[in-house]
Image (spheres, helix red, strand yellow):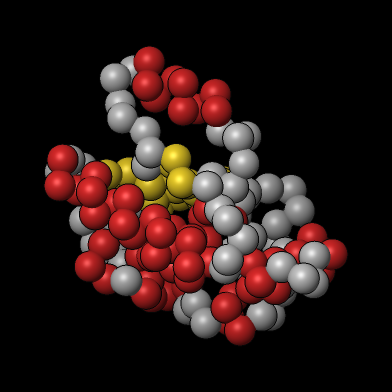
Length: 137
């Protein structure tokens, strides 16, 4: 499962497909992270009907969507692994430049959304890897 807000991970999609994996890409529609997680949940439910093992890779905001899904929607504890790439887990300074966007508002440093996560609550049964970008806090 790749969740991406852009096509920056196209190379990864092609590589996984070449290796024989099925890849589902869900794009952000800027409705907010919770709404994006709900959309992703529908895709995951269908994928779980077909597959026993699901790995999640989220790029940028996609990592927050996956994190929300795992933290706040516990029925998705069948995800085998979680990877975030350049996700603003502690908030994003860049989010300050898009005040009209609900999603950007949620990603601001010290936003209610960011502050709602307690890092110690990570479900221990799901291995996690966060690849940090240079500008991440």
